[in-house]
Amino acid sequence: MSVTRKDIGKRVTDGERTGVLRDVDLKWMDPSSPTHARRFLPQAWVKFDGQGERQLHPSAIERV
Image (cartoon, rainbow, N blue to C red; front, side, top):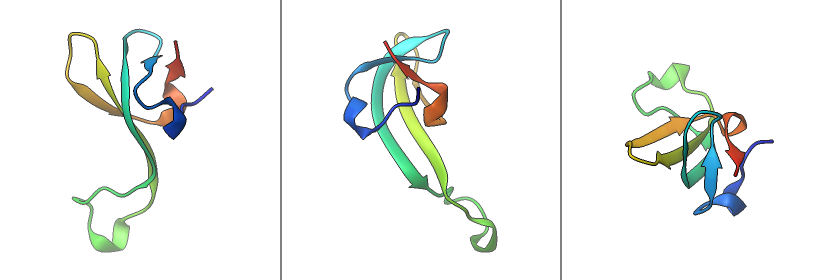
């Protein structure tokens, strides 16, 4: 089950690590991509315990 904006601030896991969901954007575009190649990419940002923040696909994360 993937996470949604309702899960922001809650504990989540990617199966190996646990952390706090910081944000979810289903229409994120990589600003470093050339304009003609940009497309919407669903993204979630998680602050894992003892590690930095990571950017992942929302379907790769589950609520704890």
